[in-house]
Image 1 (cartoon, rainbow, N blue to C red):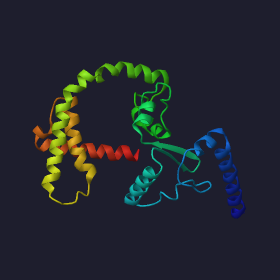
Image 2: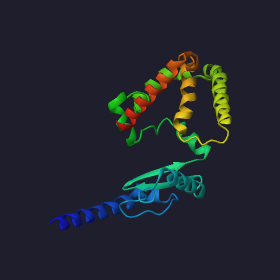
Image 3: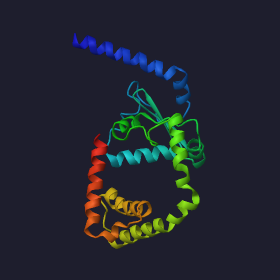
Length: 212
């Protein structure tokens, strides 16, 4: 009985896989270059590896199929792009602004704000915030960003050949400094011991968010 059920489910999955890949959207997606996948599973099998191997694989594929390639994760296709002109066309689009399924997880945490909404609601929120990101306003923050970049570069030079095992924590320290100074006018570097407490709290919140 169990074997029969499993075979039936497998046959249904095969039929659905055929349907997904041969309907109009599937045929168009498959015109985009990319590494061959497996029926039903797509390319998920190739990506079952360590983070280091995953990074090498993605880098090699991105170079081989520059500047656009596709991967299949079960029945869902993903198209990845690298060329600046392609990125510009998508980011400047006022029509194709629907978020991916990953953003649905954020709805439970932040609701449907600017980063998660779409359509008329997204446009209204964007129009409210757009003046805050005018070039003349952002220009005054360039010096702060340069300063934090130089501080991070100096810290890397001071390490003198040692391996930075936790690059996320290392980079986030200077990212937080830049964010606090640009948004709140306060540098964490001037707060002494509170800087470490703030960074620790930030990382704890980040872990909770990633596990949500």
